Amino acid sequence: MKDEIRNILRDHARLAAAIDSIGDDTDLYQAGMTSHASVNVMLALEGLLDIEFPDRMLRRSVFESISAIDRAVEELLASR
Image (cartoon, rainbow, N blue to C red; front, side, top):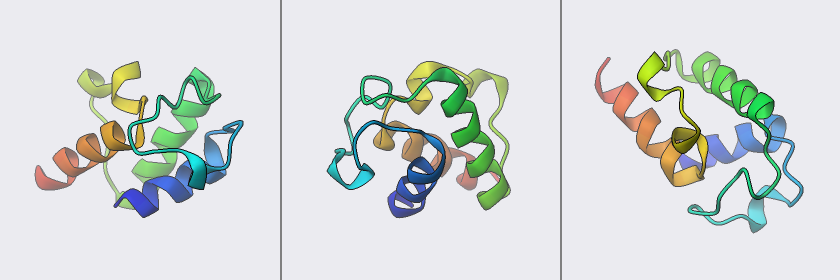
């Protein structure tokens, strides 16, 4: 799943550094992702995986790292 997340981040997060140089636990906001870009990342994930992020997950902490996004996505996929 992390590869898919990385691909979406590459296309939508507008990071200052190459996604391949960013660790799984690196703060994506410190790496240059804006709040607006995080919404684009969320929408791309929803479209790709046919999931919907509930209101309780619409927090900065859910999108702050690849690992955090992965945990949220896995939770949503498991609850389908």
